[in-house]
Structure formats: structure tokens, C-alpha cells
Length: 141
Image (cartoon, rainbow, N blue to C red; front, side):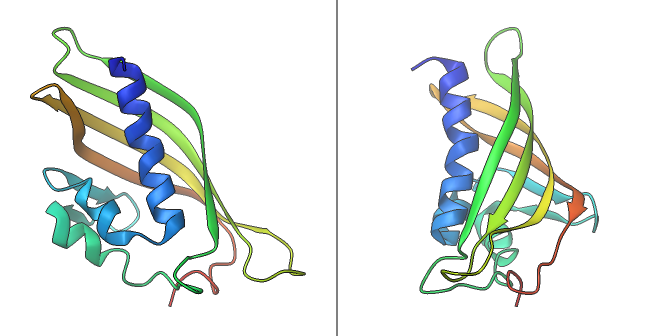
């Protein structure tokens, strides 16, 4: 795979793990990274701190019943090829039960930096920005 496809897979992998309710796997992506919330000024470092940010997400039979749509992903690889940055939008859809409408619960931006260590890309930092909020009563405990 190319650097661009490796980084794209990392960004999309985060969304897949979150939608699957695999918060441990998701937190592992940030083992060597910081995770920041623009709204709260929170800076979390490493797997255990990042994992705690997902404790409030309500699960329904092991899943939050969400679909994270990642759009407008742009990636810039720095000269030398050992660091990169990206920006994308996210929109979160949620559908709790059959017969209930799917709702948009939140939309915003991820601004990420990455580092390449021993030929493998990993997150170095994620800034999470919420631009629009919907009804999150069924999402957060």
C-alpha cells in the first residue's frame, strides 16, 4: 500500500472500530498519540486515557448503533515522508431500533497528525472539533 492509502485506512479504521463498539481497539490507535477536544480543551495521552473518553457512549447489544461518515479527507505528507497531516469531516448517524428514523447526532472535523515509525503510520495527534450537535440523548450515558 502507499503512504496515502495507509493513512486513509488509519482514519477510516478509527470510524469502523467506533461504530463496532470496539473502544479498546480504537484506544490502541492512540497508544503513542494525543487526543484533543476543542470544545473541552481536553488533552488525553496514550491508550488508557483515550479509552476513558469513550466510557460515556451507550451501547446497544455491544454497538453504539452509529455510522461515522468520513468525508473530504485531505492528506499532506511532509518532505522526507516520516510525518503527515490530514483533515476531514465526520457526520455521525444513529439508528437505535427498526422503525425509528435514523438521526444525525453530531458533525465536525478531525485534524490529525501522523508519524511513520519502522515503515508503519500511526497517529501522533488528533484534534476533535464539533461543529454541529443533534440529539445525543440516546448516544451518551
